[in-house]
Length: 149
Image 1 (cartoon, one colour):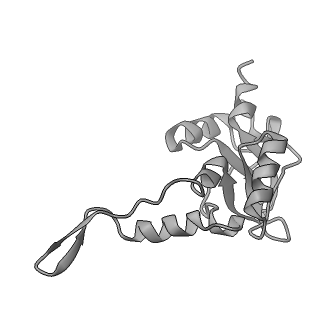
Image 2: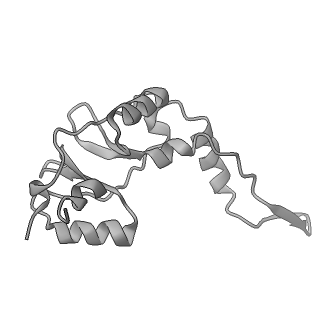
């Protein structure tokens, strides 16, 4: 069975938390990629940012619905979601929008496990990290399709 190292994409296009949102959009478009690992100065994985994260910066604000009963506000939705949405709408850098906890693979991860993760967790990009959590590759749905063609 093939392992991630057999089909992963290298070198990896990465960004830092300080990357400007407009620069991120340009980078993704120019390179025709759907996301990038977010790394620190040493190349250690911090998370991942995707086109979907960028789309949140353009969506309309959803004010939580509430009603008042006995002088108490009762929210019909999570009021903390508003704070998150405000942060996304006013995002200036990758730090404001990226996902901190992301699924990863190692070079020796079987591709069947990656396929299962992509399907069950609805994730389309997995950074490939070494034992020091340094990003050494990335595996995408397109990489997985190379197994079929």
